[in-house]
Image 1 (tube, helix red, strand yellow):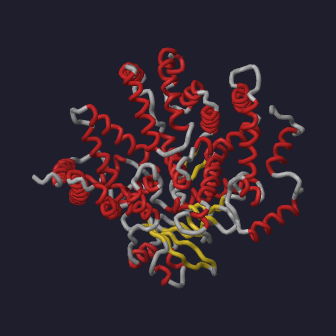
Image 2 (image 1 turned 45 degrees about the vertical axis):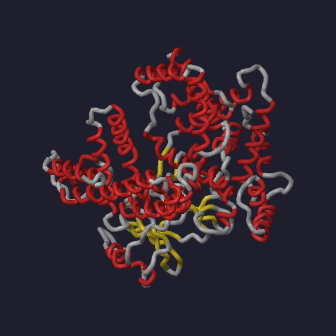
Image 3 (image 1 turned 30 degrees about the vertical axis):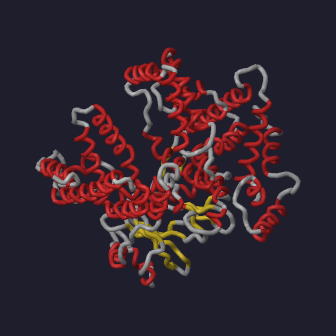
Length: 587
């Protein structure tokens, strides 16, 4: 048998058997708008031909590509063939559809994971996915569901001849509505069917793997099913433009209500939305994927982006969850436009406070406190707090791990090399096997011990993507260091009890006297963040933000100077307000 055809053959046989089942669900003529695996399974098991076709298609294409890679490896020509294989991988992912494109988009923002040839090709999947034709776009625009068809909004249909961007879920056209330029997002045909089919196939493969008598495969298959159940709900919601429009309106109001990002972030106004079409205000500027100011000032754009995301994450608690470069526009006035609100996540006030404490303890290298924070954040079980024996084993290991990951910048390749060196040193010292046995015992005692909480998946994706953007502009980019200015500001201006205790812990380092160096760090971080996010354009640029051309910057600063005293920068004014506040302040 051709080894390439084995996966397809096995999959086909399994699907045929599954299709004979009749679950308890009634016949479904429409897929659910939310992720409901039971209903999705019932829908697709009654369509065996499509299931079998998908198994055959995916099995042959993925198997054939993997076979080519193995041949390259055997013939010792992997380096020579890598550019060609990268192009073939992009084409393969495009053929396989939206689910696989979404996965590749995450990789496209991580230069430390992918070889440069693959990175170059996968970046094209951010906005240059193979487009669908005008006839299909017009067909979608004519569908009115229970309201007015979107096509009635436009008098000139020639604008739909060619899209200006084509992404995984839909493509974008530039049109005119009531005399103003607008962006029209039209969803890909059958995208819900294709994505739910893929989710069903992947999860079913995991369920079958979990029944095999091999511990490692069974464990990995179980993890795959858990990962699908964690990520699929937000992914399926992303396919509904009415939900995206609601998210976008809420986010716009959140930005307007938050003075820290009100003058930094722009959210386009929603003008029309149904499940398959969304019309919004057109934003002029350069995307981060385009040549020009955005790429020329990559490091400065990333700094502004990261700090705005820190505000979303830890101040407002409502976070944009899809920060790839194609979703950001650097506007002429230095503000950042954010697009695509299909993936959003919320963080409760208690979790936000715990993350601030964790980042503060991480910056201060207080690793035992870091473990307590991770327990509060549900990464470790609460019972671990009282287990002194387990803590004595975990804390030193955690300290070494966090120090390697965050004390210095650099990509994952560099980190892996550092971890490999540490393992080798422990092995030579005869400590590695003993530590592994102790950690395995703790993991068994606490049923896994470490776990990724469900609420954290989109947060991890968002900040992982932002770190990838930072590493593109600076190979020594250190995300915890870059996050600290927001933490410094919060420690100074937040007068709540938990922030008081966090500030005390940071300044005293467990001793009776204040550590003077920590005051300098706080002062520097506070000044950087405040001038970057609340200062004039020149103050923001001096703090590492986006630089404007001199005429535009002078005009903005002249307007600012007319309204405010020119003697102090924004950070100095705010710290004076905090210190001399009539209500008093713990600081």
